[in-house]
Length: 181
Ligand SMILES: [Cu+2]
Image 1: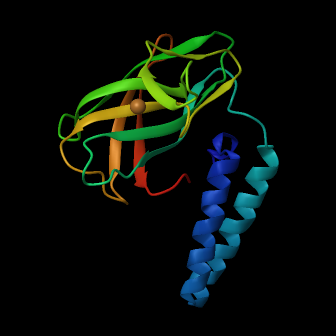
Image 2: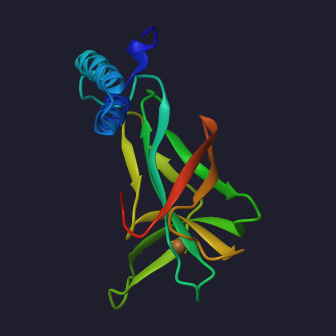
């Protein structure tokens, strides 16, 4: 496995999951393969200790979109941005294909000055300081999809193009889910 050094702990978990599925199939041949895969995964997870993203990269993980009730034309996308570089960056724009939504904004949900009600408002950018992870999650920052072409259905996948001030464009796939992963 020549790419071993690039396998992250996350990938190892996926391999492990796949090998369990293979093992469940029952044939002796696939059981043998599964055993080999498990060993490889265990080895690579030892080599890739449980730390943050590789140094020098800005990475986006865990993208998902919340299902929208059929009566609404809005949806939201959540994800985590890890800035593994030593330079501050910022998410300045998000976009989806017009076949998904006509307009996309970056929003922040927070308690209003008066009354304490939660409300959301567009922001120009989401700062992602060097070495930090910023979560877009329900009740906080999110990517707002406006004027949806159709309600978001569980299991569908949306391609979202993120534009960072420093890192440029990053395209992520967001799975439509009922709840956070
Ligand atoms: Cu919003």
